[in-house]
Length: 371
Image (cartoon, rainbow, N blue to C red; front, side, top):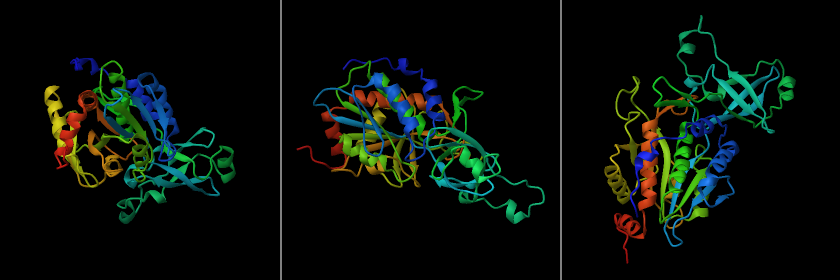
């Protein structure tokens, strides 16, 4: 297989990232995101299919007998549903995914109605003047928060088309920050990695590869890692890479550890998955060959799509690659272009290199016989 010039992948599609970030899609309601995935990816793949949970799977064909690679990035973001509506027209929130009450008051939100209309409101907050210390110092629980739509009755809310169960998401615009390598937006968990998968398909469309590559943009990860489970049974992969974010710890709150802009992150383990040791070693070799930077992640709380992928069927050789993000599970997150670009390069080259012989070596790393 001929070598390719990886410098051609230094430019990324920022419009794609903007569209992915600004789309609204909580668990079970990812349609806006999946439409972006299919419209962007259809010209770089030769097959698109869906499973019955709504995950969309794009195939880039290699050799007919080549191994199957599954790349998995989840489309859903943490958000809310309309839980109830008061007589005075306030909307009570039901969290969908993990939220910390500190990050919510006074944030602007979007309700997406059943017919796709967008209704805007603000999360209620309290003026600090005269509040007793026990109230000031208490974190408001997300279930106790409400959305103010600027109307005065339940009838007015109904006239806007808002109903129980409608999706609520932060209303945040994508931005390049003062150093344009820093990108701010909502839903980087995990839309930036949806972008990685699509960029990899674009790269592979103009380069040879023997493996059959399936990019699964999955559903319902934030509410139980559900879409990856059904997507595995649709693809039946031989090897899988989950693409997800990890927590950056380079701010004054932490001041140590995982920095933005430091390059590739190999997840050795999280609370739900152990990365395949042979796969980690192969990734390290590619990192060295491509002159990339590498860090290692040991996340003792939480998991990724790899949690369910590696346990399906007879077991799937799996690993998670991560992109660090600041302010995860909040309305505004920040990532770094260098981490995004290096992850795309690593995954692209892995998809070009993997073959049956290398897959046997990966399996032998955990004691599976090649005979």
